[in-house]
Length: 150
Ligand code: 9QG
Image (cartoon, rainbow, N blue to C red; front, side, top):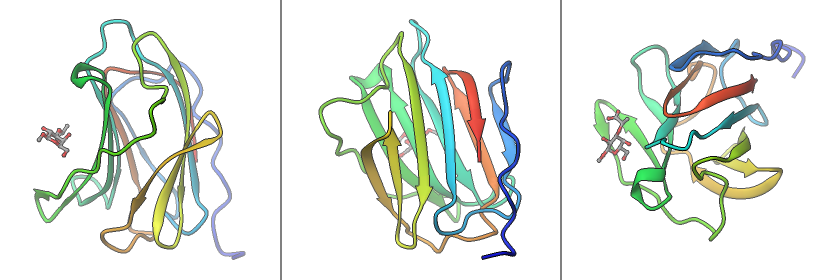
C-alpha cells in the first residue's frame, strides 16, 4: 500500500551488539528484514527478537545456539512467558562458529519465512497478530553484525 513507509537506509558497520532499532511502520505482510553477520570462533549463542515495543511481547525469537549442538531455537515471549520452542531444521544451516551468514526474515500473513543465503531455512507461524505495533528489532549475544536492513 502507498501509505507504507519506504525502506530505511541500511545500518552499515560498525554496529554494536546489542543492536536495538525501531522499524518505522513496524511489520506488515512482505516486510523483509535482512541481517548479515559473522559468528566468532568462541561464540555461544545469539538471538534476534522482533518485539512489540521496548520490553513488549516478542513475536519472534530466533536463537541459534552454537553451544547446544547447533540448535536453532524459535519461540515467542507473550505476556511475560515463553511459549513452546520450535527446533526442527533442515540439516544444514549457516549458524556455525567461524562462518558468515546472510539471513532474511519475511513477514507473511500467517507466518515468518526465514531465508539463509537466499534459500528457505524455516518458518514460524504467527502466534499473535503481527502489525505496525511490532516495531522493535533486537539482536543480542555472540555475533558480529556486518549489515542490517529493513
Ligand atoms: O531457555 O529459552 C527460548 O525458548 C530459554 C532461554 C531464553 C530463550 C528461550 O533462557 O533466553 O532462548 O530472554 C532470554 O532469557 C533468552 C535470551 C529455556
